[in-house]
Image 1: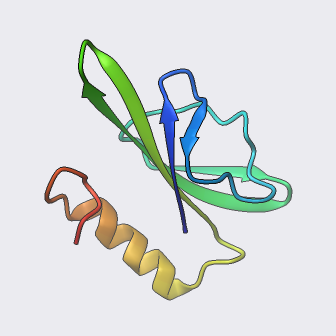
Image 2 (image 1 turned 180 degrees about the vertical axis):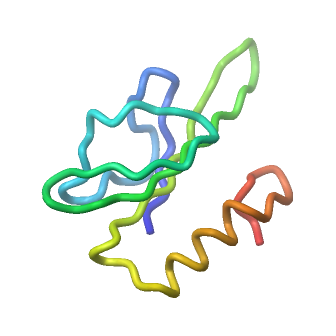
Image 3 (image 1 turned 90 degrees about the vertical axis):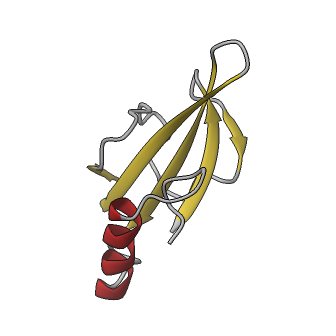
Length: 91
């Protein structure tokens, strides 16, 4: 699983982009998605956070099914369901 932070224009601010992840993937807040790139299937989830004078940043979680296991899928689903604290992914 990978966690990255982007500005509202999709520029990477923190974290890394996984190898073979389709970099042109548009940020889309609060919408779990499956995408395909480089012969892999990815599950991604973006969250938008506003701060200051209407500034925005996005947090993106993603993982590849080829790398993931059933256990990772169950953890992923728990992360999406439980929303506590300042970030929706604390469990």
